[in-house]
Amino acid sequence: MTEIDRIDRRILSVLQVDGRIANNELADRIGLSPTATSDRVKRLQKEGYILGFSARLDPHRLGFGLLVFVEVLLDKTTPDVFDKFAQAVRRAPEVLECHMVAGGFDYLIKTRLADMATYRRFLGEVLLSLPGVKETRTYAAMEEVKNDGPLPI
Image (tube, rainbow, N blue to C red; front, side, top):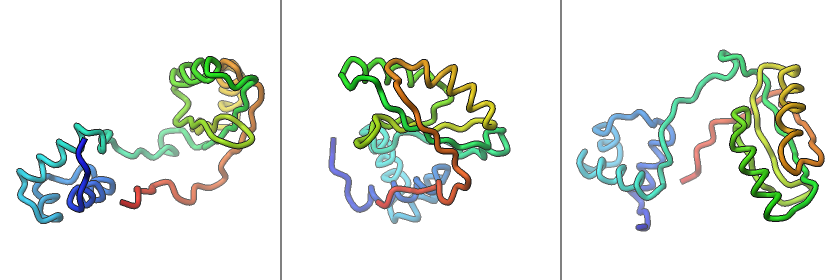
């Protein structure tokens, strides 16, 4: 893996904001030839700096208006329990993000669902049935203040 330089960082910064930018326009913005720009983008993808490209969708228009964060406390904190929990949570399509955290609980889960009744079903049928779950705490978001945060490259 190679170190990224100032030009690579500019490419990443532009692509974070506009992943659909044409290669020629990207080249103009960073001051390289289209071929050199394309080569750098391919290298950044190959080396794992760019994980992929996707469209940001409006969850409200698609019927996923309830944003919920859930603290999960496991009954044991052993490698086996962590592995079983992680494998199971990866199979739950409702879970958008899951992070192992340090502090008073073990995992923080982010999910989007239609409404509180749908969340209640998800809690009972999915979350509480995950391996090792001892306790959960739910936080329903009342307002999304910022969710478009590009990395400060």
